[in-house]
Length: 175
Image (cartoon, rainbow, N blue to C red):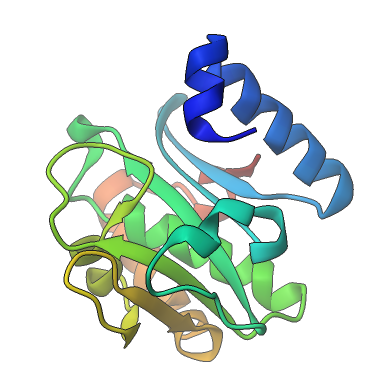
């Protein structure tokens, strides 16, 4: 069902829940949630492009065959700026490396102004993505998983400083 049709029918949240359930059953974990002191502070959703048919509508599509698509990410404003976004991407990288994928790709938004499904390109660049297909509005960015894995120790040290002795593994829960 398209996004517009889901809104017309009345419950896009229900459609998202159905998509997550179907993807979990067919492919496995497709997201991460970061918790701080028991409070959900941010999330990411990702899946192979086959599970995201509307991704072909982006002008910089298609996603590379060796990559998984990072569809959306969000950090609750009171938790932003503390490294949670980087930690979430690191959790995705760890999961996808175990599954044998080589990269994460995403469509960034260069004119992002408020929360939406598309991730700000600035955020993606700040956590290590590189532009692989430029566009005035929606560039396609890529993070090679080899480089992402090397972040692990740096991220853990930074998080311990920010959040105390919490380990990132306990902070990230798969969707």
